[in-house]
Length: 339
Ligand code: P6P
Image 1 (cartoon, rainbow, N blue to C red):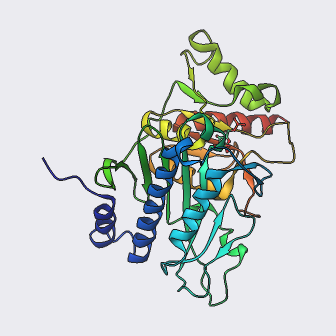
Image 2 (spheres, rainbow, N blue to C red):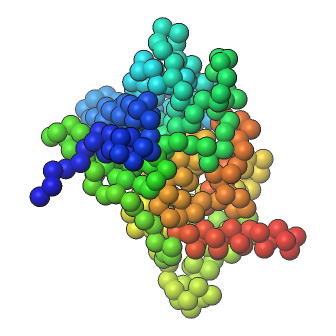
Image 3 (cartoon, protein in one colour):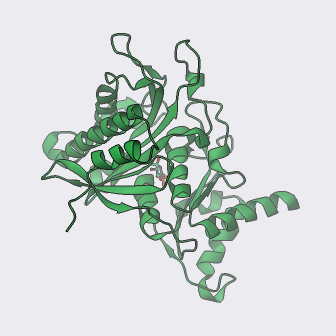
């Protein structure tokens, strides 16, 4: 039986043999993975670690911050600022970018993250996760500015998430497929447990928060109504529904068995394009989904082609099995053409 492949060995081989990633990016990804191990340890302690409950503050989104949101954010900042591979970081939990302090060397990468996605699930012991995205610093010898982060998702050089569930699982792409690593707590390292993940083109499972039904736009309503009509309706097959209310958990399920995840624009806050954030939720997840053979749009446009205007901007998200995403997108475009 061949020896297990660690994340470190996987990344060294991507660097040395495949020439896919430079050493600095390999180092960055190893540091992020170590930070996820620390976050997993804190999450697993739960009430025993005094880390549950609210921190008594709000983040830039106006959402109540949980203690673990702040802990996870601090773990990622502390782990990544001294290594010399980053110029700056951006986080859901921080309004402004975090430029690497002058006491440390600066590198050529920008790291963006949602340090702990799905925070409403922390206190009820439901899977949560860390989402991260890596961009390259634009050419030029000036200092780092927020505008340097405003690159479309197609410019990412690495993206991944770590789900803290029954297992702690890291899912990663550097642009040539998707690999999954499971944390071996006895060894203390992530071990390759699946390589080249592929999402089925079709599915019978959708994920959406049904309580928002009355607020949806017509194309979304049409798609869901057809799913609910089942085998007697226009789709000719029955559908199942899942909604974990933790994007990392819902996306991971789709990565493992297919499905379609939707958090579309709705009438509750018509000026907001959606609930989820483009830069550190939708972009990394969309690239992972596309690298696994799926698709991701905002209903009208490929998410990875969206040109960001603001660091914390939101976007409507429809992602997963290619044929379902194409159908929902077609319904949006048909409705636009008819209006
Ligand atoms: P709702 C978690 O807060 C999150 O940002 C995503 O992880 C998740 O998919 C979504 O919001 C859940 O939103 O409105 O169903 O609670």
